[in-house]
Image (cartoon, rainbow, N blue to C red; front, side, top):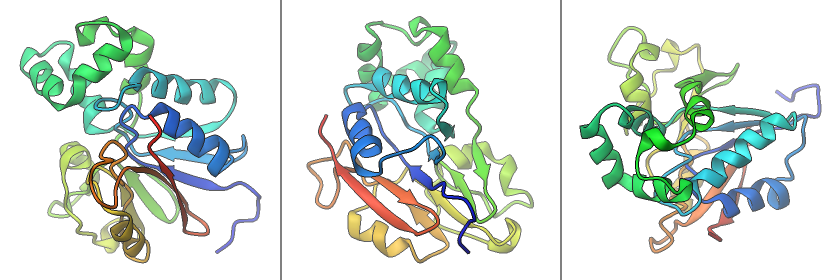
Length: 226
């Protein structure tokens, strides 16, 4: 059903420090307007070279009055936990955290300015729209209430959907890199995965950042330029 207003709803998954790519996608490809809604599926940081810049873009859009709605990914969760847990710090460091520290010019997660850590800590694990559930990874449908398992929302790669448990909605996530053809095939299903592995330019069919417009179900890709 078409919505009455002229606003559009975009979903962008795993950015992983690709700030130049994100900037071109939102400015020159989808031409984001202030009245549009921009939903982001987590993993803004790590692996790519410009994690701080990605967060600056998102925080800046919010300050300028854009309607930006991020959810938390497993990489944000690892960073937040790394500040007080050395085992988690080592795990995060081995999974791309070094790139984030370098982007801030620091050596420890606790040295990342509080404003950035607070921005990530305030991100919810999921968002419920009238027609979709948006989250980073997956839902656990093996329990009575899928929305209580935050670990699954951050880490699970399950493609299961039981729409009767989530109000008939479809599920959109990222987390698992997919080729462009796999993403396009998934658009007609109840479980859409949008992660095209922006940082994995060497992998066939990957290396782009995607933006899905929810009302038209049209998808745009921007090749990694970072």
